[in-house]
Image (cartoon, rainbow, N blue to C red; front, side):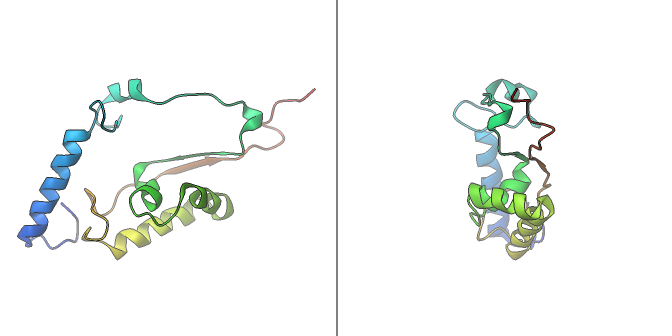
Length: 135
């Protein structure tokens, strides 16, 4: 149920139910999306790879609540989201997500299973001390 959506609105409740049912049908199944919080076996479905530390410009890990700015709301590209993180930090990204959530609390513009989601961001940028010695 969307928080703040006006619980008495029957058509909204029906949409919430259909949205949640569609997510449930696609969560942690082949061809769907995988979330470890719902099923630890999802880790077996992770896409993995490796990159030399010296080749990394930085690293950002985001929960789905933080990535909403890009993948749910479409208010930033992945590149512009990274630029925001590097320039202003995680607090700025989360503030923009919260602004978008508040602007569409009932989920009419951006349908989603909950109006407000937890948002966590971890960033890392290499320094001279973290890069391997080139000798």
